[in-house]
Image (cartoon, rainbow, N blue to C red; front, side, top):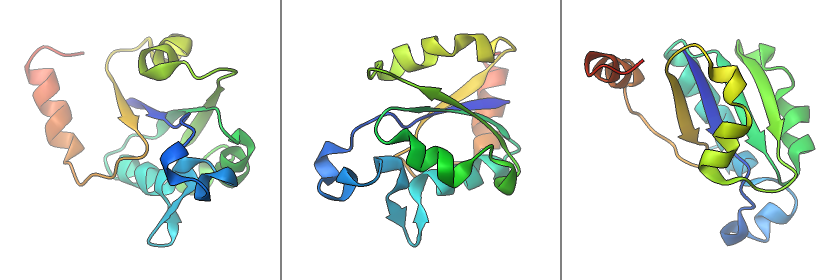
Length: 127
């Protein structure tokens, strides 16, 4: 399974912290929130990840590179203007042509059991 992590937001409510870094790079207990989300996805075998970026994209790309350090393959979608949730996913739809995929707001942290969620989705007829 693949995942799209939505990380294009400006983080205006976290200013001035986000003047120098994108919201997805704000540390939570010493690690960027995006890193925590990538580790969470890996735990459930999701290793093909697309991340959309807008504000200071180079900060994220310099930190994560191709994702190999975390055992994932990262593709970046740089938005010239913020496209919103549906627009961000539609912009890279060609990358998700093989069934179901997960879309996640990267500024959320979760302990959700993705295996259960995916199993439920499939049991109800989802791709």
